[in-house]
Amino acid sequence: MKAKNRDQSLSDSRELDGSYDQLTDSVEDDFELSTVCHRPESMDKLQEQTKFTKKELQVLYRGFKNECPSGVVNEENFKTIYSQFFPQGDSSMYAHFLFEAFDTNKNGSVSFEDFVFGLSIILRGTINDRLNWAFNLYDLNKDGCITKEEMLDIMKSIYDMMGKYTYPTMQDDAPREHVESFFQKMDRNKDGVVTIEEFIESCKKDENIMQSMQLFDNVI
Image 1: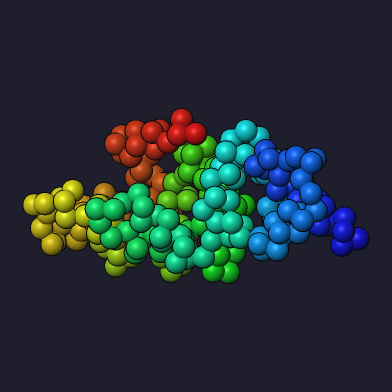
Image 2: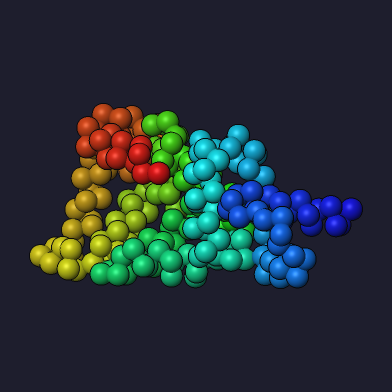
């Protein structure tokens, strides 16, 4: 039974990265299993549960496995990978918030499944799906509403990530001004917090937000 599960794990992994080769010997099999601590679900399941094609999943898996040979990524590795895209600033805090959003099981690691489920929503989800995901990112303590303090933490992390070179004349109070503008638009009943209903309604009425969300449609 264990041998069958072992063979199925290898088969699923190779189907994902398109690297299956019947000539691969058992020594390589043993090495691969010993270095990988998490096996992704089968291609069919991932196709059913996401909006990616088989080819797209294979491309994503190759990239994921290249960066995370063990099959999962912890927060520190995630921050290191993410920092490569923003060398001009400090992306560590924003990467922390992003990691929390991808780590849906709250077990301190992001698997390939976690990664593609989140990416499928961001890139291929409906407007409501994407806005719900964004709200969850901003709702840091997951209590169902966004406070000014939470949004300020997010905005500061974004400004830090973009770096001083991107905004050389930016004042220190710019993130707070951005938050005040955000709440003026979205906190409809002026109770000091933004609910998911207020967030989605306000975003849908904002032409700039809607246009920016459409930029993701053809990323892959």
